[in-house]
Image (spheres, rainbow, N blue to C red):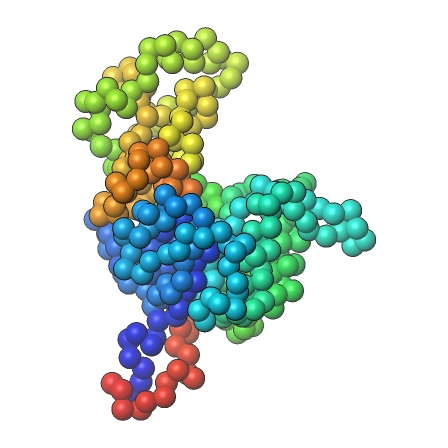
Amino acid sequence: MGETTRNKKLKVTSLFCGCGGMDLGIQGDFNFLGKHFSELPYEVVYAADNDSYATAIYNSNFKHKCETKDVRDIIPTEIPDHDILLGGFPCQSFSISAQNPPRLGYKDERGKLFFEMVNVLKEKQPRFFIGENVKGLLSANKGKAFPMIVNEFEKAGYHIHYKLLNSSEFGVPQKRERVFIVGFREFDDYFKFRFPQPSTLNGSKVKLKQVIDTKADLDDKWFFSQRAVDGMLRVREKMNKGRVQDLEQPCNTISSHLAKVSLNGTDPVLMIDGKYRRFTPREAANIQSFPKSFNLEVVSENRQYRAIGNAVPPVLMWHVANALVECCSVEKPEVVKDKNVV
């Protein structure tokens, strides 16, 4: 006797949802490289992002639909009640105000987005939140910004765990380091939680060659021109550019700049029979651990690159979300009302 399966699911609100990497990961029930990542007891009830191209991809892949909306225009009281708030907030724009004590501020409009997430937490008080950000957040403003960010979350009523995770240690064919911040309204949840342990160590990491499409090797469209190669070679010694990837290792971090990848940049590229090749959008999605069934083709290739490069790897997110299942009871006793439900 107890709840229905649906009632056991914790409700999720996803801000800055992009094309849905975090959302796919937290809900589970997808396949990657022959492995099934089981359904997890979460369901997204509200999602929003300001990039209409990313939301077009999102809405072609999920039954629930996200809004194309600037987070600053969201009224927290109008968001559905939820148990978990997700958000990969931008971090480029934090500043430290020289007050006594110093305070966290923002340099431009993007910096406000973190505070919008805090405002939702203050208003809705979900049981958990999960934030994700680049490794550089830990050292931003000479290491001063991150403690203040944690303090803002704590002032909203949350106990905080955080950890730098490398996606290549969790079955993703990419060396992508990201900070995960997990907040808990209840101390018992905070006390029980442990971040997931690596599932793929050095000997078993997924190799780049496992997700490369050899058919793309036959299409000149994906190769750099001789002019681009010559330009890179002239400055290669002093610029350390042209980052050819080792197919026997996980890929270096891919970014949203893949549409404009240059041999004079630090973006990862392939060397095929002595020629330089960029990744296809589908290969980029593979590198990020999106399933082959994930539909990208509702937007242009340039927009696909941008959305995929900005995403959280679904497999990595699945491991973080599964750690919540393993360490914290997801059943909420107050939901169990009908003793006749089997």
